[in-house]
Amino acid sequence: MIHSTAIVSPAAELADDVEVGPYSIIGDDVQIGAGTEIGSHVVIKGTTEIGENNRIFQFASIGEDPQDKKYDGEKTRLVIGDGNTIREYCTLNRGTAQDIGVTRIGDNNWLMAYVHVAHDCDIGNETIFANNSSLAGHVSVGDYVIFGGFSGAHQFCRVGAHSFIGNNAAVTRDVPPYIMVSGQPAVPRGVNSEGLKRRGFDSDQARNVKEAFRLLYRSGLRLEEARERIIELAANREELRIFAEFLEPSERSIVR
Image 1: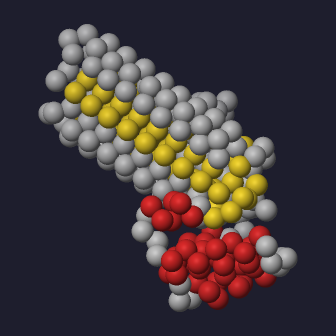
Image 2: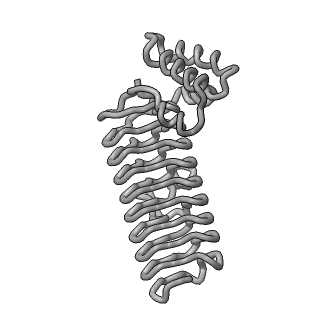
Image 3: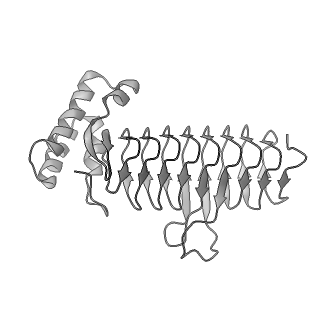
């Protein structure tokens, strides 16, 4: 299962059925779970933990040192879950000692070619990153988020679950759950209605999300007033709880 031209460190831990393609390099302190396929010319450095049934295409760089001038060789980590697809030329960096020291990528994510995930990012599950989309350091991305091609997020931004980032968008502030944004800098355009439909939200749930969007962006209320109203609605509308919680004060503020 390991090509004769691949270089795999004796210190690496690979499940018995892991496939490693030609000329790939697996370094020390790398762990790779069952069913994962590593293409040709892939470089994986440690400390990196990769779960089961992932597919990593040729020329990807996984677990390299963070692109942070403060990094001074500290032992930091990259943790990747199960079922992810990581396409050509993706670059996924480890964390830094100045943060929690780990970059995390959850399960069933789809990272297209040339995607960059910088140090200390935290990505949930079922996300899609289109070609050339990028995250700067310390970015948090919720479940089911979609990043359009060539879009990017500024350091320390949060991107809420089920949101949609338009192509070429520059996210410089936090994006609440369910919201579609576009532009440079990115601004809210509406609710990600198509995404809600695809994920099985019923008409009442979609209407509740749209009401929260109206309160936040169309009612003329101050942010704190809108948040209080949304908290009231969320008391018996489960889908709005992540919306209300997201509106807690943050380092970057929210797109408005």
